[in-house]
Length: 114
Length: 113
Image 1 (cartoon, each protein chain N blue to C red):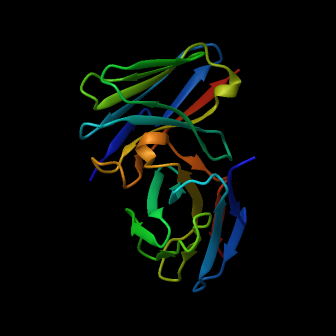
Image 2 (cartoon, chains in turn green, cyan):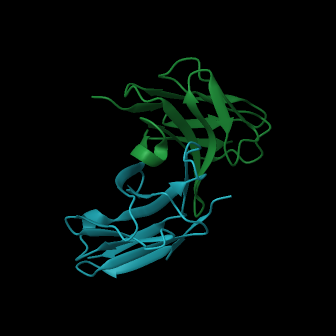
């Protein structure tokens, strides 16, 4: 079955470390997105990519970086510059533009700074 | 930028009672989408509304899009324990829609048996 796979499910990071969250999809979707979810904050867009080798900053991109070298993959790196990285990170994809077809979400990665 | 506001933040109901969540945008939306997130899970797409005044039904769920395309509602009739979760509305971040979606903060539905 097609879907989006995020790994790991849980991740613990020490202060000052960079960590990379994996997101892989086999839906043949062009667009991919990273959102951050905090209690009471809803979902906030970090980065998005409409095509391979191209991506744009979302509303809260500071302290994060991404790459889109393959259509299937959109990894997110949480850098040490991100001041409050503890959150639930959700990767999503859409067949075309999201407002036309809706998102398919992965099961998420819970990142905790220890 | 685009803002989508959702109320209430929390709603406690007795099983069998009805539930409604409301979504309001600061600007006219080309469309609005609704998602459900179960506790501990990820958001799942429910529906998209496109036309002014549109009403769509999915079993006990009724979705409406306002005439001015700036507000929307989700109504659940006779809630069941399987309805527990957080319901989000989402609209295009920009007029063209190529920049992803902006989400409301969600309404947490809590059902007491």
